[in-house]
Length: 221
Image (cartoon, rainbow, N blue to C red; front, side, top):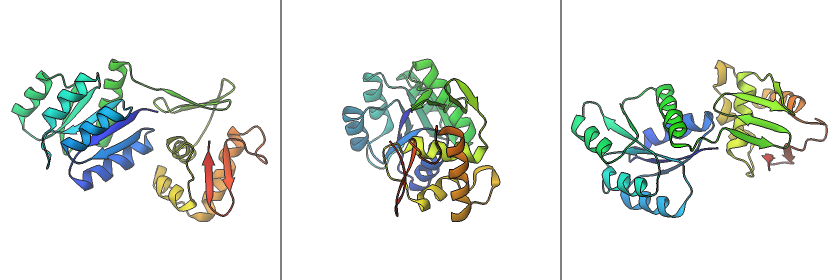
């Protein structure tokens, strides 16, 4: 799972990016200023930066310089028409830029392209005998592809993105509520988890991948 650091001081943009990138199989961190970003670059393992040039504290150019010093790919988020900043960022080694307001699908396409070019794409996650290719949207069990609905795939990605963590039913509903335009409530969530287990577990009655934490929720180890 590719880890993306979002450096942005607009909380609404951060929330939008985190929600969409999570649904597309990425793990995200977010900070609002230069000092925090430099600390994450030094101390955390990340694969790519989404970087606003204009920050409330510091600026994106210093962060870009530090990121490139660590061999990390950078995509600048820029105000529309800010050509001088774009040119300066690219001259510093930024891998791409996208102007605000941006289309989420275009941004994800740019991210995947940059990750491929930089060799940092982490395509496949293994859950026992089940492989999950987030980039291609392919799930296989023992080498045989499994046909999942859009909502089932998004549910599985919610577990993959929060691997090792407890997910409450409310948290899962927030992750998948708008997948494919389907309405999902607490009762139908139970149905979808049952269907997903039937497709990926060796024994759905004794699940080894999606485990129930009684009275709390679910966890994938």
